[in-house]
Length: 376
Image 1 (cartoon, one colour):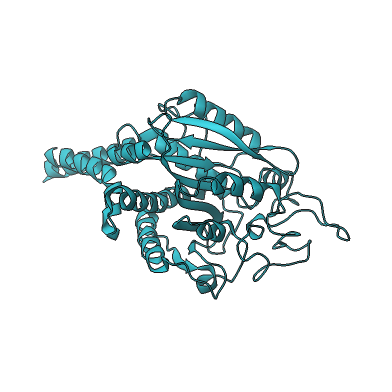
Image 2 (cartoon, one colour):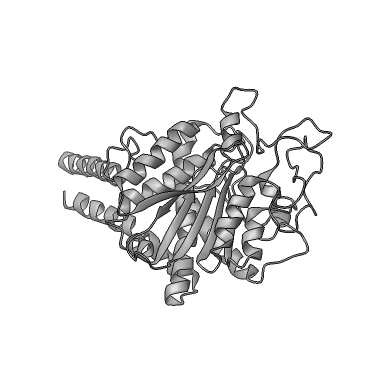
């Protein structure tokens, strides 16, 4: 009996080692393809994120490139990372992801970096991910509202800044526009403020802000190419789909809900966290002028807003110890959606279960560990 206990203990120890070894969150980043000495479990200022982006490109020239596609009000570059394999000179289908449109939502840029890191770590061994990177390019903007994000880092009094940093209109003294109310999608109709001092100030007109212009010009010129538009926010643990106006529905509403619910199920499987799925009027509040709604109006079939952790305890001040679990679950949700979109486009698969193959890699490795443990 004692011998059996020793064998069980040894097996459990080996399983723990296996799990540690396959843990894709080993983010001290001494692994191939990721920048060295970069901590993915803490928040980073713009300067460090910019350095990280440069190193990602330098260390992964076969996979990653970058380009400036716009300029902020204060003259800073808005830059994306383009991630894809092969097909040089061929116009591939694409996935769009932006983070940090609201300055105070620091978990969003952290997730964009996490998302890129996961791809770099696993695209050579994960067959499904490798296949998707050959068929599609991923455009990822880690920080869209660069001016506002930098302002939120100044001190505690600016930490919860939300908007851009453009100068106030005549007769007002408050800077900035809510960039996620500035897109030309039922602009200024519901869920906005015309008071420039309010957090949901929608601007002087649709597309008045340079940051919104940058996205619409780049994405708008590639509408036929981009299959899915993902914009990352916090907080509330929600997966929002078009439209924010209560009297308008997306033509593929039912499919968007079904795919969103399956993605939420995948997220819950990671750490047990619940994510609600629906339009903003259904589960949050009506709004207009969002980038998510604009993307769907332009004809991009799949458009979602991720509202990451949490449900009110910390809000936009999510502690750094929650970065890793928040990103782990969000990655599974994003990957589920992207895989569904890919398989529908390239294989005409519309059954929700088809996307489950995306997660086959990790269970396979875990099964191998369990099998070895049993042999002990």
